[in-house]
Structures are given as structure tokens and as C-alpha cells.
Image (tube, rainbow, N blue to C red; front, side, top):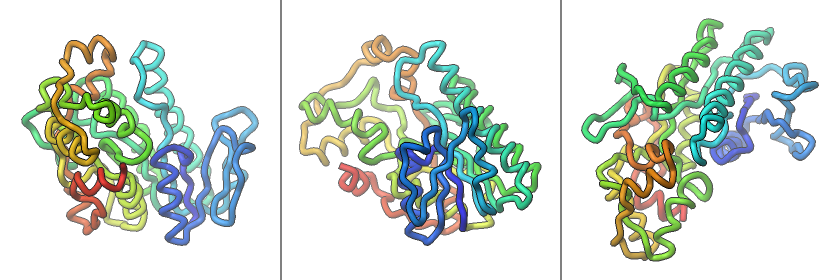
Length: 298
């Protein structure tokens, strides 16, 4: 298949490209700086989102489009940062849907990134793709707008998958930051430690997206999480054990809130999310257990 990826130079995007290449597909990566990239036999870099770039004119017939573009959530959530988080996702999604609409032969599937933040946060409730209620905080609002924009592809007759990512574990992303306190023998729970953390190994994140591309039965919301979410205190204990470091301190919530501001909700609050649709459709996780995922990632 010919598959387009936006955000293909990022942490998850790179792994997805590798996974698709291993399956024999040709990957077209949309980037703002194609001149800095080197094409290969199975990877072509195409410029977009800058004046003078016309990706549609450089693409052959496309079978699938994957949208992973969007600025990082990390960093102090100033007014400007929050607008960048929102606008970067909506602009990329709108551009892709518009591009799909102009294709003479439409792709079979559009997989658009989202996040488990859609569900809001809770220490008691568990969420699956069948959950209809959404959260009311900043991230829930952003993911709602993001998904509504992506759903425009559905009106074009395209099978549309809304990939709600949990915390992705690997050598990039959140894990390098999460392990730092433990490396310096100062690791422990964050805040109460009761908040849920829905995670997935990067190889499974890419594997599940590739699986969703191939499975015609998968459409709508898709939780891209492992089947074993953990509370922060349990996640931290497993991380400490994997790193052979003590688990003994606790970072008080007020300290984290002062340091991170509104972004502190990412680490002090969470959601218990299960990948019901992935399991029901037969996807086989490579790393269903947290200990194995951390062992490989670290």
C-alpha cells in the first residue's frame, strides 16, 4: 500500500514508518523541511504546511492517510502554548481532510491521532470506546475539536479511525523525563499516587495503528493503550524496580502544580482506559505487561 503519514518524523511516527516498511508498504512522510531528508526506496518525504508546497501534486494514488501531527504537550501551558497545542492539531487535520477531498481516488482509511484526554480524568471510572461522556478540561476540549475535524473525512466516504493515544513508552516521549528522578535516587509517586496512567509501548502503538489500517472492521474511536493501566504509585514502583533504584520519595502535588502550572494535570490526574476495540478485533499486544514494556524501553 501507499501510505501518507503526517508527523512521520516524530517519536511515534518514526516507529510507525518502520513498522509499515517492514510490512512492505511505501511511506510518504509529510514534513515542513523535505530538503533536510533523504528519500529511500520505501520512504518519500514531501513538503507541506508552508507556502509553495503542494503535496497533492507529488503523491500517487494513496491507500491510507495517518495524521500524527501536532506540537508537543510538554512545556508550561501559557496562553500561547495552549493555542499552539490546539491550532497545530486542527490545522494539520483540516489540511489533510481537504487534501483527501481533492484526491480523484480516495484512500480507503484515514487514521487521525487523538488522546485518552478525551475522557477527562477520574480515579474511580474506567473508560472504553463505548464511553460516550467526554471530559470538560482543556485537553478534553482540544481532543473533541480534533476528532470532530477528523470526522469530516467520514462524510467523504472514508473509513475514519480516531486513535486515542495513552502515554507512549520508549526511548523518546515522556519516559526519559519520568525516569530522571529515579536515576538520581529520588524517585517515587507523584502527588497522591492514586491517579491512573494508561500507557502503551511505542512498538504496540505503531503496531496497532498498522493493524487498524488493515482491518476494515475498525472505525471510530480506538484506544491506543495497553490492556493493563496502572495507578501512578504502582507504575512508579515498577519503574524503580526496572531501574534498580529505590522507591521512597513523594513529590507533593502543590510543588508540581507550582512548577508546571496547568500542565500538572498531565501527571497529577489521569484516566483508566482499556483497549476494548483492539482486544475484540484480535490485536495481539507485544507488551501487554508494564514490566516487560519498561524492560525493553529502558
